[in-house]
Length: 158
Image (cartoon, rainbow, N blue to C red; front, side, top):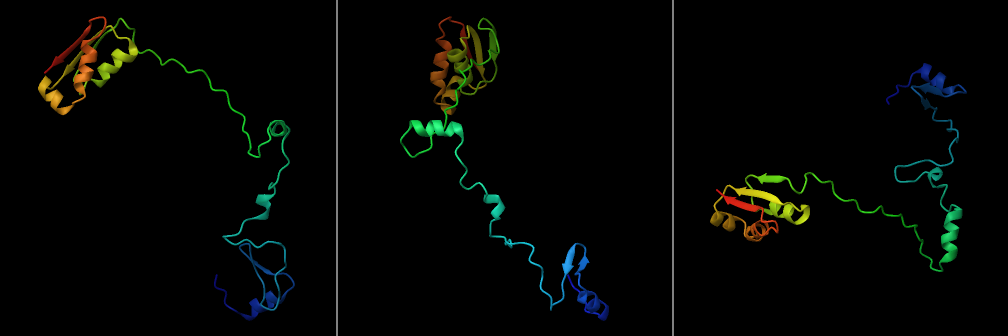
């Protein structure tokens, strides 16, 4: 804010009330600013009104927990966990499933292990030798699919 000193401005500043310019009050150099605030805020100080609840009185439900224990640590009430839910079934176990272009057959093995699939055909774009060269863990996954209890697991290589 740049203010140019003029005789009119000096007379205005000498008045009893300060000059107000866009909600900014300008006081003459010989007058002191009124002390309206007790605490002057700087960027690194904290406002006293934000810390009114430094030592709040304990709530009634906290007293019950504190009376029962002799330790000084605060005990938090344990929330009840809901019972684990069964994942939704995307298909019926007797469905016939065709998987095209499986990489290491981990998805096919997962369907056999966790979803009780009875009829599954999984295909690969690679030959069996290329598949085992790319994915060493594929041998175990192929064995899971071929070794299904129902005998419905088929693996086809490209």
